[in-house]
Image (tube, rainbow, N blue to C red; front, side, top):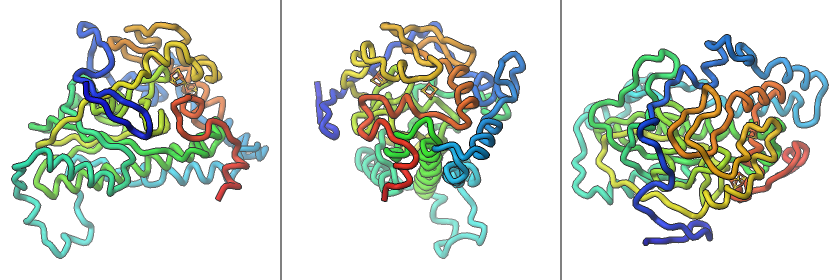
Length: 357
Ligand code: SF4
Ligand code: SF4
C-alpha cells in the first residue's frame, strides 16, 4: 500500500474512501432540509425565523469582551467578498463589465487539446495553489454527494453534460481567530475562509473556462463538500462532522469546482482518524449543546431532519448547533479549535487575537 508523509503525518493512500455507506439508504440531499433554509421555511422548528441578531446587539450594547462592536465589524467585513460578489459562483464564464480584455473574446472559445492528463492535472493544482488554495485534490464525482436540488429555487439540480470531475480545495483558517471560538473573531476567521474560497473558486473556474471547458464553482453549494474532499484525498471524516486534514486538522474551509476538463483523480487517504475519534470525544465534550454524538460507534441514522441517513458516521445535530449560534449571537467553531488534529492554537480570547501582530 502506497504511503507518504504530509506535514509529518504518515498517510496511507487507499483505493476506496475510508467510510461505509448503506446504498439502500443513501439519497441525494434535499436542500429543503438545509438548516439555513429551514430558518425560513419550517414553522415546526423552534428556530423558525430566529437568528443571531438580538443576542448580538445586546452584546454590542454591553461591550461584552469578545463580542463588542469592533469584533462584529471585523466578522461582518470578513464575509464581504463571499457575500457581495455572488458572481463568484456563476456557472457561466464571467463577463468583463468593460468588455473583453486586449486578448479579445475568441481565443478561449475553442478547446485546448489535453494530450497529457497527469500534466494537465498538475497544472490545475498549481493554478489552485497559485490562487490561494492550501490543499487541493481531484475526484471523479460520486453523484450521491450532489444535492438533489438548488438551494433557493429548490429546482432539480443536474451538472452540465460531461462534467465528471471536481477539483476540491481547502483553505486554512486563521489559527488564533479560530482559537477564540465561540467569541466573534472565530466567526471572522470563518468569514475570511469563505471570502478566500470565493476568490479561488472563481479564478480557478475562469482558468478552466479559458481552456474551453465547463467549470461550476461552489462553496457549500451544489454538493456535499466533506465526502467529496474525503474522496479527493484531502483527509478523513471526523466525529465533529468535518473534514480532518493531516496538515491543519479540521481548521479548513472547503470549496470545489466541477468540470469536464480531463483530469486524473487522487486516491483517498487514511491516517487513523476514525479509530482516534472513537475514544477522543473532545469535540463532543466541548460542544455547549451536545450537538455532537458521544456514542462509541457511529451509526447510519440521521439525528434530526437536517441530517441525512445512509453513511456510517457520528451525525451532527444541526438543530442544536444552530440554536447555540442564536444564543451565542454569532457562529461557533469550538469543534474545530479543540480537536487534537488542529495544528493551531486550541484556545484564546479576543484580546489576545487583537494584540497579536
Ligand atoms: S459549531 Fe459549536 S455548537 Fe455547533 S457542533 Fe460545533 S461545537 Fe457544537
Ligand atoms: S475532537 Fe477528537 S473526536 Fe472530535 S473530531 Fe477531533 S479527534 Fe475526532
